[in-house]
Amino acid sequence: MRFDNQLRIAASIIEDYNFEMPLSRFLANYFRKNKQMGSKDRKTASDLVYSYFRLGRSLQKQPVEECLLVAQFLCRSSFSPLLDQLQPVFNQQIELPLDEKFAYLKTLYPTFNPSLLFPFSNELSDGVDKETFVLSQLNQPKLFIRVRKGETERVELKLREFEIPFEKLSSTCFAFKNTTKLDHLFEGIVPRPFEIQDYSSQSTGTYFKPAQWEQWWDCCAASGGKSLMLYEQEPGIKLLVSDIRESILDNLDERFKAAGIKGYHRKELDLTKNLEPFLPGREFDGIILDAPCSGSGTWGRTPEMVSNFEDGKIEWFSSLQKRIATNIVKWLKPGKPLIYITCSAFKKENEEVMNFISSELGFEIESYQLLKGYENFADTMFVARLIKK
Image 1 (cartoon, rainbow, N blue to C red):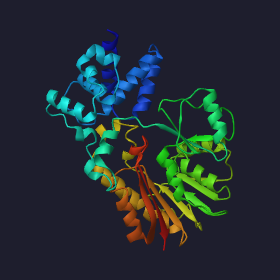
Image 2 (tube, rainbow, N blue to C red; image 1 turned 60 degrees about the vertical axis):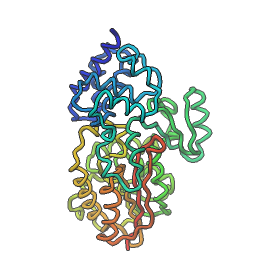
Image 3 (tube, helix red, strand yellow; image 1 turned 180 degrees about the vertical axis):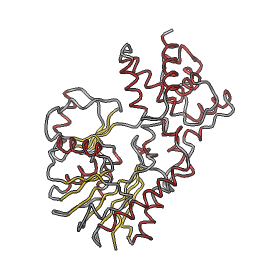
Image 4 (cartoon, helix red, strand yellow; image 1 turned 90 degrees about the horizontal axis):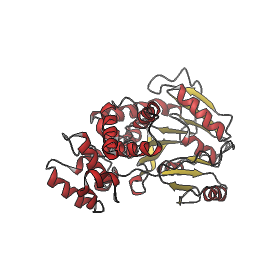
């Protein structure tokens, strides 16, 4: 009876979800209103709902509760108490390789199409291994931290003190199970010796290369993750951060305060409009454009996006990125770098925009990289360093 109830709760959450907010926030609100649910029930409900959305569009026109069982079968590789009670034949084959699971499901559901776990594979950048990327949608990416220089030993000791399992990818990058809690480790200590930051996002920092006293502009700064890396590489830079929403910049202020960073400037800017009144006489030695995008490289963390995304939005984002790039590059000094970044896996948002900046805006492509996060249980991203002629 308990497992039937868990399935019903997950199905009711899915039927109530309208995509107006991220699934994580919707679930948090749901659990706040249903305080009778214990931590184990909340975890089970979250797992079931996220697994359901990982099906993408591969199994359509089936009842939600049936799809939930199929999703558990595909997303798990070890014994499931829920499947053992509600669909034991799935549990008996839970350890099969994915290709054999797919073949089995096709015998039950002739319209099942595993390629529709991610139905936009034809739009992927050339360097993406399509099959591997599509299959990665069934896995929850890991949690990563960027450890500050000189703090590696201190962080390791604290993690061992609290018996938190981790994988050390480098002296500055540690990986954890996605549900790991870390906020309590250095509570109240400023600056905190690490930042939560995806593995691929950390890798974009190698393209910055700032010099002392240079003027830099992080024009779509969001919560400031890229700016924090920039400061760590060169604390002597003079930085302007901007974003379209003041609330986002308020969050950035809190994060910078926790990192012990002062002396930067901030502006609320809409980069699609005339910026002349807001940047009079300004010239920059470097601009970071972490562009608004589809976020398709992060959909392993937000699988609900696969079901709700429309193909036409790819072209819309690409046009937006070109418009923003056109607006901001006039404030970059000749011979200086524009760092173009997306968390997209789509060619139209990556190579196509990079080539536009090169051919239409007068830039030389110095280097670029598709960061294949799907190979490391991380986000897939794109980064390019372009020099203004």
